Image (cartoon, rainbow, N blue to C red; front, side, top):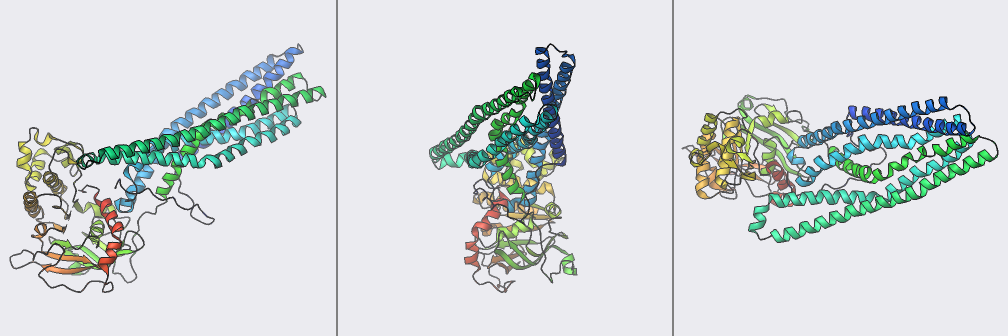
Length: 626
């Protein structure tokens, strides 16, 4: 996916009757949250009873009464409280690890389900940050913060019920009213400081995206003498991120100061005053008064979570919203038009490798292609030409299985392209993109992406077909020659021929070539065309190119224009196609367009070039699928 796309726009808030937000937690994570919540409540009750028993024991000592029973109760309650708290922390932290992995799998699986076509506007750096740091923050928020914080908010009320039943009702009611103020203040602070948390997350992901862009384009930035400007921009983004983080921490510290200095002192003072008043009128004895004062310590439990709220809580919620924005994107679905012959299979279609029946394709609301009908025979080499932005890359994205048709049906090797059969359609073809993406590793490692168990002899044969074997043989390490990221160390022509060798190893019945010679010199183009000719034997080949040299072996040529396809060239007597010009014109007659409705296709295609090229970038992203 492109790392130069804008960030995903924020959706409007959910309205009544709208679709609920996607569920991000697993069932095991929710069960762990319930267990942690229950253990925290039980621990709070044990802590409350421990303090009540301790206060009564101190009162008994002042009266010279026996205290053994009360001390035993306090000790048992303390052990119960400690055990529950430790177990709750263990459950929360262990479940956070599994939830972190679940969030990554869930988000990544949804992005893969969307396909490169539907996720073209998500920046790679922002996605990487979200899947790493963001997933960790959400897991910590949901498992180590959410349940314990809810329990801590409910625990004081349960302890006050315990206090009312065992000691005195009046102090419990008054303190209960005071305790309600703390969660209300937290909610108010959240509403006031939520923007700072969102700003911090956006600044962090934007900085990650900018750094990834700079690293990936380091060579281009250096050659274009833009390194210093990029460095200055990164410094500016870093300073923006620092200010956003400091703003969040400043709000955090302010809230902690207010809660520790105001609410802690307020609750303890109120508890002590109530105890003295009730003791002075004879409603309680000294032991009960001490129990009321000591119990006020448990009422401060929610305040311990306030500091974590603005670091773990708000950071986790901000990243959770970002993950939900991705998960709320609907997975692609194909919908056949009424009357489309989705199940029809004529004799001609049975012999066809690729069949498009009244297909419509769109990246957004407006269709890029409409009413497209095309049949490609098995073993045929079809050339696709047309002006930039007309829809060639959209057509290739559908043939590769990366974009589902919005109407009509598309079949590749007998499999109709739907959301359920995308992998089957993708498995039928090997895609060689105009910019080859090679991973850091050896030449053999990059070849084995297509065939994990390929033997050295098979890899050498693939290199021979791609006309690259002699050059690799001259390298000191041969197949074990190290290749840098994005093919660093190889020329453009060598990288493209390595891509063709990878496609040969994949051994798919359909070969898709998207501008295979667009970034190489004429000598490399000749070698690539020669290797394509050998690679195409026994396979169906679809080639998109603006260079006539790459289309000399085509059996037939179609032109993409005005939202439809035109037949513009067929093979001559010698079996070679009448070569089209750079803009797709050919010596052969031009047939009527398939939809017969649009007349301003070039203009409309240009207007939608952003959507079309977005799909092309998403489908290619400098890589080929094999």
